[in-house]
Image (cartoon, rainbow, N blue to C red; front, side):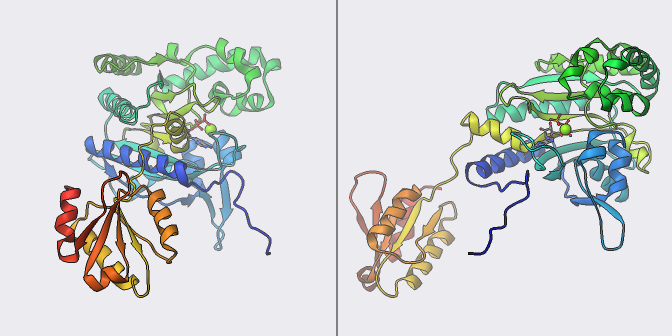
Length: 424
Ligand code: ATP
Ligand code: MG
């Protein structure tokens, strides 16, 4: 046997229960977003590397250590997208979608980060992202949060905690940065290597450290939330009062900074305690400066991304994924030359009764083995077609889920008969 070729570490095949949960989640999210008037957008998986370094920030884990970057054959540096916002902003600018108009967009697809694979953390993972362009007020921040809350309710997910924070304006952060650097410089001997480097380049990133040894230092740091500009304070108070009006409970987490540099004002995360360390299932916030930063006209924007694998794991663990539809009818064929009438009759039923799931036995097999397959498929009825049935232009209709009698039905009456058994 030839040597097996395996998938790349951290890049998984998704099948069985996993894909059922995945599809159910994406379908429910799409349906929810459409309910709020949002539109789908499809974006490339590969972008110029520069797009990400300029938006996410040079001195972030994602750009420094996690990005899949490569040269294409013409020598340009390209990257597999590590997140969706930067590409969406690029697309909105390039296609003139952000100028003097409001865009409410959603997308889904794979993202790539060279992280240490573990439960809830993969190198290819999937996000469902939502971005809104052209709105600066707190009502849209509240709408994004309430629509995620509605999605959790539809999915039957109960134990998610909403954490919110405000990062203020870019200018307020400059003042705060000085205070933070002063505080951190005093405890420099206790900082880890990454943090010492960041003290010079991007000190706010230190607050996002995943190193448990740094926890006390981060806890003791001056809080950005206490150094906000007046307008950001008003924005944050408005958001909180909107959430109160909507009956959405939240925790203000002053240490919530997010792993990407482009955020300002509102940031939020939905967190569960049920997935261990990988507890954030949805995260986002405002990024009013980003459109301008990557070459567009100043345009306020806000968005979030859900981690599909983590939410799918919650759905599976909580047994929340509805059964994928089983066949209504399984068509059993036996004898010589039965495939052709079998195919034709199956199509006839699918044409006339499109709400039915009809599975035909392909590939032959004994009567017994076909009935075993019919039974295992979960179908409610078997249509049985043998040489005799074909000669008589009838089928045998056998109930598979109870002990009621098998019936004989003429081909001409089959549709009428089935439509009584399975009203649309
Ligand atoms: P974390 O703190 O868990 O690393 P993050 O801040 O890097 O998350 P974002 O970039 O905000 O995450 O991405 C949004 C969501 O995408 C996360 O909340 C998470 O649910 C999911 N996510 C991020 N990275 C991964 C990954 N490597 N594998 C699986 N899901 C991920
Ligand atoms: Mg991360």
